[in-house]
Amino acid sequence: MANRYPTFETVNFYAGGRLNRASWLRESSVYLNQALVQPDTKFVLLSNGNPLVHRNDRANRLALFSWKDVEATVMRTVRRVAPDATSVFGAEAYALRKKGDAEGKHWLRSTQGILAPALSLAFLGILEDDAQRPHMQTFPDCKERALAVPAGAPCFALSLSYRPPNVAQSEVLPGGELRDALVADDAPYDELNMRTVILTGALERNDAAVIAYARALIDWNERFTFCAACGSRQYSVWGSHKRACASVLAKLADGRPAFVEALYPAEPPATLCPSVQSVQNYSYPRSDPVIIVGILSADKEHILLGRQKTWPKGFYSCIAGFVEPGESLEDAVRREALEETGIRVDHVAYHSSQPWPFPANLIFGAFGLASQASNEIRLDLDAELEDAFFASRQDVLAAVEATEQKDRASSEKRPTRHGHRYFVPPPSAIAHVLLASWARGDALLQGKL
Image 1 (cartoon, rainbow, N blue to C red):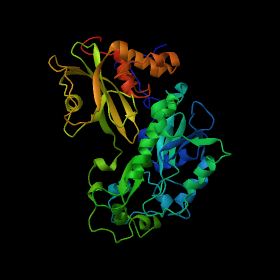
Image 2 (image 1 turned 120 degrees about the vertical axis):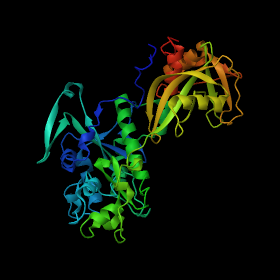
Image 3 (image 1 turned 180 degrees about the horizontal axis):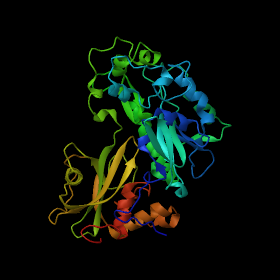
Image 4 (image 1 turned 180 degrees about the vertical axis):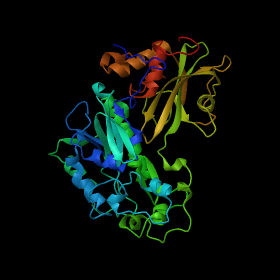
């Protein structure tokens, strides 16, 4: 049965899933510590952004681990800066106390959901079952506040490959030791290369959504280790959904606890870093917006396919590009179409979107209708494409079906370009979704296509 991808209703690969992100729980160190050690809590383990999956499993089922599996690794890392620690999140775990004259709101911003700087651990939310979704439990965070907690299993992501900036490459870290043990020849797990998933889509969709979130969040925490405002080291708060500046913590903390010394060994600064004085976008996870567009001929009977020189032989796709500052999605579609193909686009219609964790893009899929006087393709403006052409609905449908069915008969029906058969992206990519949606008549643009 053919896959159908209707406009506005399509849930793309890496999207959806049954994870309730429960963002209101991230600031509570009390809840995070309690959730961490629950018997049903699940841990997604990543190594260089690649998840651990069950070995010899054709579906590459995501391996979910318990607190008992990771406790020694996590606590050894925590105790690098807090030798007596018995918990992972919060100021108390690291013997951090506010200086008497320090402002309370800045202290909270610097310590809510705080964790060890060498630990790359993120709270993802609650894995819900459909039967559990209506239910909430009340969790007593503190005397003044009670938290509503969705029913289900708390879920965390743990990176086994993170190496902080001040740690020598020769030093063996607890995460690396655990990773080596789990993927040893006689162990039941493998590290799944996420780049192969792009081509194969060989992941269960719920697993793919969890991995996309975990991979993007962990990558952001590990990539942004210095404050954009003052250059000091950063660390994670809010269960790794916010980065905080160590210079602020050094100024507000009483004494020189090991946590502070590890990040800010100098004397506290005279003034507070701007990062804590107002909301700053560099303190929060980022998603870079990208557009991908199926450019349609003026009669709507052909769609543009293009290829870059570096792509595999015979591979064609829709054109795509990053959204620039001060630009709407529609403006980005028209600009990319003109820059890459010389085609002027009039009408733009949104179809669906896809998170793309390489490392943290959000792709907006759209169709663009070429103007009546603009069907001539030119590739010399930004010279990004090696070839581009308008393909018929029949040819695109054949290419789409060959990618979906993966059998010899379908492969032999693939259309040709310059005497060679070409192929299009797999169903895990939004480019495939756009092509299939148009070819099968499921897309909407000024009425049904």
